[in-house]
Structure formats: structure tokens, C-alpha cells
Amino acid sequence: MVRYAAAALATNPEKTALARGEYLRTHFKNMREVAAALTGLKLTKAYTYLSDVSDHKQIIPFRRFAGGVGRASQAKQFKATQGRWPEKSVKFITRLLKNAESNADAKSLELEELFIKNIVVQQAPKTRRRTYRAHGRINPYQGHPCHVEVILSVSGEQVERSKDKDAVASLASLNRRQVARKRIEAARA
Image 1 (spheres, rainbow, N blue to C red):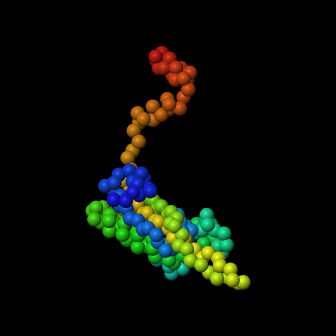
Image 2: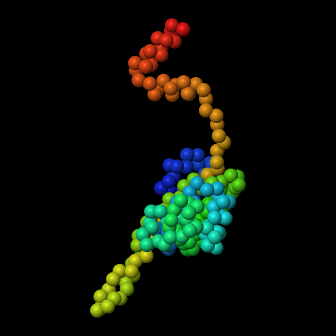
Image 3: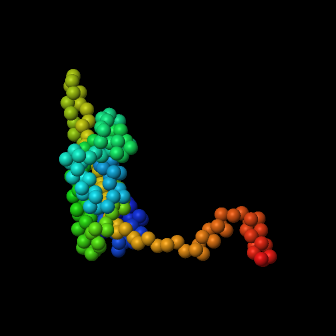
């Protein structure tokens, strides 16, 4: 089995499902912004969001790789000004999410409870071509593919915090003199 870059995030392997795509021929920068927009969403909500993006009803906000990206009013709901509708990246990430969902189904995880724990996007080696310029010159004409890893997880039940841990935590934040004073006061009482 291959090693996942974000395998350390999957603390409970029985509750997580993984999928990965390598050397995907879609732009790395676009895929990174799509992944950032999807991380943390429930899987069903992610599917509807991606279908809305392909229909141009919602937008992918471009935050890091935003040089030359036009402004769009749809980006206001994400507290951003710039955004795009990267169709090819949306298509690839939808396929990966479907694959991860079927992996989760094979592990008999609850499909309604799945959420996107993490998406890792890394640059793959550039594909090299050439383009011909004026006066007999040649310039590189490179593609920027990417590797993508998706980790789906089942949202765990919330556990109430124990009371005795709070007492230990309050002592841990005190310095040595304050702890000694508390002990003396407790002994007097």
C-alpha cells in the first residue's frame, strides 16, 4: 500500500476512508483552492457545492493563488473578493470524493455522517512541451499536474469533559509559589 502524506491525521483508521489521485492533469493552483474550499464540509454538502460551482451558482474563492484572478460578487459569502469556477478541478475532485465514499462504504461506515477531514494537494512533475516564438526562438510550454489525497472521516461523538481534569489544568497554569500557597490554604481548612 502507498504512503499517504496526511496519514498521520487519520488517528482512527477504522473511522476513516482514503482516496488518492496521482499525476492528475489539472492545474495545481486551481486544485489547491478547490481543496481549501471543501475541507471540513460534510460529504453530501460538498457534492451539492461542487455541482453548484459547475453550474456557476456558487464560486470557489481564490485566496492564495489569486494573482490575475478576477473579482466576483459570489465570493462575498466566503469573505473574499476573488474567485473562479474551475470546471476541470471540480470534475477531478468529484471523482476522488466518489472513490473515497465507496471506500467508506466498503468499510461499512455511515455515509450520512462522513465529512472531509483533509485534502492534500501536491505538485507533480511538470509536463514539458515547447512553443514556437518569433525570430526562431523556442519557449517552454509546461503543464502543472498535481497529486491529490482525500481523507473522509466519521464525525465522532462529543464527550463531556471530566471535572477532575479541570482541577489539574488549573494547577498546571500556576507557578510554584501559587501552588504552594494553595496547598497551605487547603491544609488550614
